[in-house]
Image (cartoon, rainbow, N blue to C red):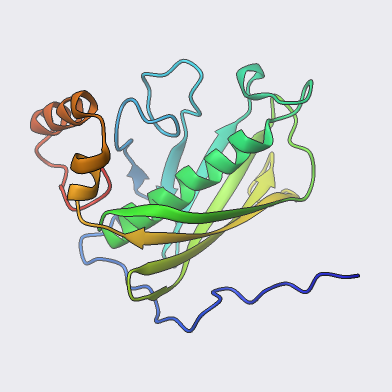
Length: 193
C-alpha cells in the first residue's frame, strides 16, 4: 500500500506577507533568548543555531551535529533534528511576521542519516496563513546548501497573545527575558520571546 502525500498547506490559505519591519535578505538573526535550547548560547548541550534571512521570505539556518546530539552511535538523534527544524521554522515565523506564535504541529520526514560532525543546512519558507494558523515548511541539506536532502519538515504555528508566555512560562525565566530586553531596547516585543 503506497502513501499519497497530503497537500500542503492542507487548507486554503492566503499568502504570508512579511511584516514591514521584518529583517532584510542577508541579515543575520539574533538569538531570541539566551537560554533557548535551539538558538541560545547559555546551554552547553544546546543546538546553538544561527539563522540568516534569505530571499523570498525564507530563513536559512545551520545546525552542526556534535557528539552531544547523537542517538544511535555516530548519528544525530531524530528528536534533536526535529528540534532544529522547530527552531528554524519558529525563527522564520517570529522574525518575518513579527507576531508571537507557537508550534501547533511539526511533521518531519527523515530521508537519510545525519552523521555526527556533519552540518545540516536548513531553508525554511512561509507557505500560507489561514486565520490564526501559519503554515511553514523546510528542507535540510547535508553538509552544503546544495547537498542532498536529509530531512524535510512542515509545521503549523498558531498565533497567540504575548500573555500566552507570561501565563504559562516560568516566572523566573520571564524575568530574565525582561531584564535582557531592558539591556537591549532595540529589540521589539511583538515577536516570540
